[in-house]
Image: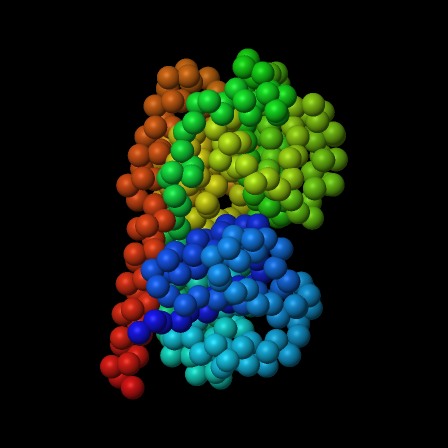
Length: 376
């Protein structure tokens, strides 16, 4: 029997949760699942890849920040039409809507997925807590995030499971030939140390902290360069901050890019300045590419970086500590950084491949369906 799974997500914009959902949808489809996706907001990204693989994407056409009770009616109707065996919800709003709509539509298995340690404060914790019983299980991507959710009583330990993010080590792999090629495109010469930071220009990533830290780095290492990949509502204020800090010649915002693996190969180090996280894809991708990482010690980050082995960890919202760690990495020899990157890649290959993540998801879905059938 071919089982069907529907994914419900707040939106299909460039981001870590969205990337993992698409990887999972494509992977399950390859294993024989019938797969479709419902996006609450109008999809912005991933559509060509999904269309090529024959995965339908439906939209509720909601407006960001505008509650619409009609969405519950629409999602319930779509679920009744498709009749999935499993509904998997990603992100806060989709978790709430999916629990309600999935229950009304009598979807046999409803799974919530929490992808971040912070999703809006105590009132959102409460909403997930009181609706938890409408679903069957909640998945998160980090053991440390799971501990936080249990401590805050968002999800009981008995109804929570960790399945880490995964990636393809073949896509994110060291390619020395790209180093000079991409740096020339970025106008960075061989003597300059190139830092790369990737993520949406939003509060969570705390780029204001990064720019303050980088200004200190430039004073000590005048040849330093920083490239920031991503787009978002904070672009203008961040550009203005770079001007005020007098680092605009050293720091450039690249916007959204499709060539992230190549950009990673061009970098000497990767930096993540987030105020909160789940299990960030960018760190996994950087390590898989053999690049050492300096990152804030938030969410599941310390599950990916062993301090001093694959990079360095610092407290969040501490630009001095961040600058010191960046400088420390820059002072390592090329061989020391190369060895650090190689150790990080090996760690990712052993623990965070997409195949491993997909096997865990596939086994869990079959188990939950089997249990439902057994007890009906």
